[in-house]
Length: 503
Length: 103
Image 1 (cartoon, rainbow over the protein chains, first blue to last red):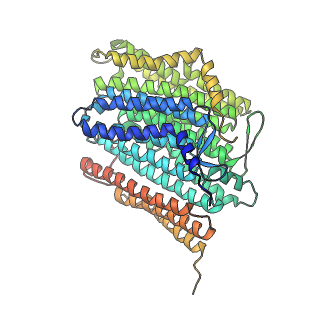
Image 2 (image 1 turned 120 degrees about the vertical axis):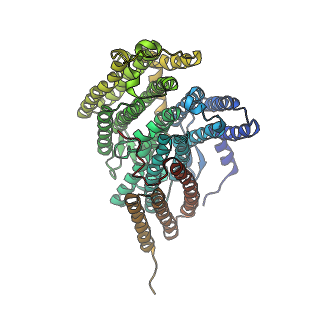
Image 3 (image 1 turned 180 degrees about the horizontal axis):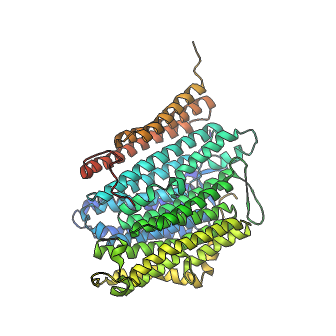
């Protein structure tokens, strides 16, 4: 086959410094857990140091455009490009906040003796997600997807004594196992048709018209099942509400942001690299006619957001409500992909940067309340706006931002998606998305009504929040408010990050 | 003496895949559902090796099959641990009875 030059290998290792850092952090976490048997205080510090170093390496090589682990003369198993680096940075940032959440979460604190495995598994997820966003080979895609899944199955049931926790992990493992198995079958068919697992090689092989369209179409859809499950797109979303409600809150927040971001990056890369024919000067993609991805994604995204928004109307549990809301947001994000242009990708990147903060913030407030009251039911939120005004107002801002109302950052995210849709002359789709936003207003505002307008039967006990928690909420609040009025740096970052290797 | 060709392998693999899906849909026992998932993974494995052999695609397919075998083992370990935990908390492994999380 190819002459495998040692220099190639060494150069590739330089390119995956962030991933190597995370791997080393996993080893150190296990060792620290072994050596400091009783003292678990050190683990979050080690995790944070690992994330900071990995983040530094990502920023350091942000604008690199290169293949790592070359399999041929011009392609490789991994791609290091600005697009992937943006998503890696987002994952590292979200993980850092999740570590801070975990330190202040009561659910996690109660299982202190198992903290070692907790942080190790989180790092396993981070490693898998980093490979996911930079993979250009079907083998790497499948392996990284499974690495993320296997770690998250266990994390979803981390506090295993409670009923809902073990149920969440069972449902997650069954749905996840099925969809990844179906995806693997699709991969095997694509391998059979083209004889290659590399996305770039597949792309050049299927440019010729004698490829069997129907088989390839089916295989493409089968692969979409696996990725669609990760981003909780509509027909594959059934696990989302149950797992999000059952899992510990930091893990729920992690799944709803980092794992979803990695899934989206993988989906965009898979569709664009495998099926692209050409990109015109205005940034619109021309895809091969094997699968009509545009119509397919539009149908899936409308289904996803409508289902998510309407199911959320009847929820009385905050975590379940946020789970359905995150399904709806996956629908909006898919619209950015349905535009099939670089502008749409920029809109997705802007949306994700904002969505990370507002969703993390909402989960943080829900967690702080659950720490004190031990409940996430909406009925227990009555009068909260008066007993603890700080948390009430913070949650209100996060929810208004999730709805997408100005002057919060959520408005900017939605605005760019809609602009991309209108530029692509997809007015009908934009109108449907707008109507969906109106529906979502109802259930977000219902939470505010519970907090500020409803009087509780008995006076809600005021509870104090630690200074660290207040600081964390403020850290999440600042970008949500600042990006709402001053978003030029975010847009510039997105414009710099749309470039995928090769196109 | 019949000649065993690619289509024979593909036939076995698609039968295994269908049986896997059938098992997942019809079985109530969580362990049986997991066995259905294993069948799907193995059907994909047969595909990989058959395509690699009959298509002369090199070793990629066989390496992929090896990876999948390892992953299937890891997944089985994790899934069985979760099912064991389910049995401890719910005293049943019937997936239909495990429904405390509902609207």
